[in-house]
Length: 203
Image (tube, rainbow, N blue to C red):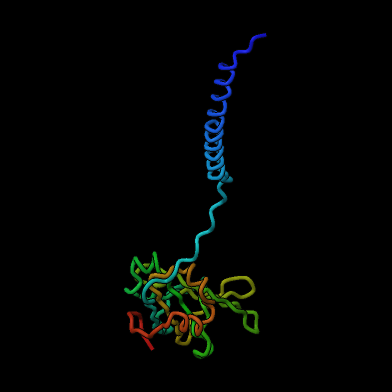
């Protein structure tokens, strides 16, 4: 067999020349694939976290006034009586975006009970005091129930109600910030100031 040494040497030379070039190309391709894999190794998107609580911006405007309702201010019958407190301060914005709290000053004004409120006396008489809040007014409802039946007698003494108006904070948010049953806590939390607003009469 005759071997063409010139041709063989030429092929060996070509292979020696191409081998480093092929190796460099392979390394470049391999490095490129590693980069792609590194940046594409991303798992599925997790669930969104819950929103944080919104902070309170600016000043909180909260004020209160005491209203007295005399016996002749009530209207109704044995099923219950009511009195209307005109209150221009309850605007549409307060009604939609604020909070109105109404407290009954019982026990000679020593205690403040958030409405609605009820209790039973020693003789089994149940007394309900509630309110309906509207734009521009509040209706106070008073009812007595005895032996399961309405048996309301018009209040014979003057009743006092404390109204607290909190601007720009909805009632649900107010309840999350303070126990609204605790009148003193409400006044401290919102720095409630006494303001002479409209009503039947004021103390």
